[in-house]
Length: 480
Image: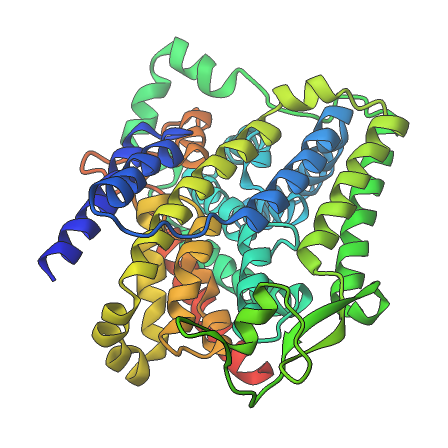
């Protein structure tokens, strides 16, 4: 038990140190923790999450190519038109626009261009920018569990299917989208009268006494409406949306996919004695790709959805390059592709480290947690949330913690219901979208407090995740 706790401290320490450095360091420093566990303590290495990584690479490449073509500018422009048409309700419309942008492209890092616009609209309408900005930053990350191409959703489907919970991508987002929208609207309602109005805020009024500060706050105007969008950029968006439709179509109608001969074990068969020291079960024969009459059988298995997503996304990226004037070099230099590659490294290191630890201590974990999760299976949501606070990646939380949850006997519908709880990294305000939002707010009302945790994202984050999880749990119980 002492050794188990010591090794857990090493895992948590690697995650904590990595989060201090941020960016690529989170995945890289997890590698140090992995090396200590494997070479120092002799633990058997877990399995790297290669399927999820491949999907992220394909989706981020496609989204990055669309950004390079100018397609992302068109989406931002459409969102700005909506926001400027309804400035009085910016606190409600801002999170909706950032949420659905993330749902479309699978990453929350696309909203940086939109944040200054949200602040600009709020200032010109006399609305305290903290109100829409705080909840809009939260919404940009909440959308990850609702995107058909996001790693968290695809990993949930892949791992769930492997654990005999037959759920599809549309099945996940049918629960996550309405529940997360409910959570965001609850957070927006709580933020609607948050803080002092600008004309009653002494700190803000004191800034206006300085002509330089007044010019900084009210002098600029952030907008994308003056940018001319070429038809090639719009075509890139159409290709991207078409690719999403193809993925959703195949996820719903998997019988339309090509099927291939696949080996599986026959239930009820006895182990096959190879020699005196080796006994193989039917499942082990399947993994070894050995067909033994009476022990294994062939059946038609459709193409896996993780491969469908990769094929469709890479093909869509190629079409954009050929027909939409998208420069690959520009895509590689863009924020979408770069942030996606950072996510790849983070998930690679974090999930491998977590899988190594948990796979070696699975019996002990079951003994400690089985009674709790048996009585209160929803309590796994607290575990997901706390892990997310540490590792800043919803995809990494799903990949590293979902297999453990299934091994504890928690039903798939329960885990689908608590999926929104994998977003907890707003708790400590060190995530790039939150830091950027603070910098974009020229009024200075969106802040990271003196005591770190009293920041502008805490209240909308807690309300959004709590309400979303409760609603998702109810919907999942209703549907499944």
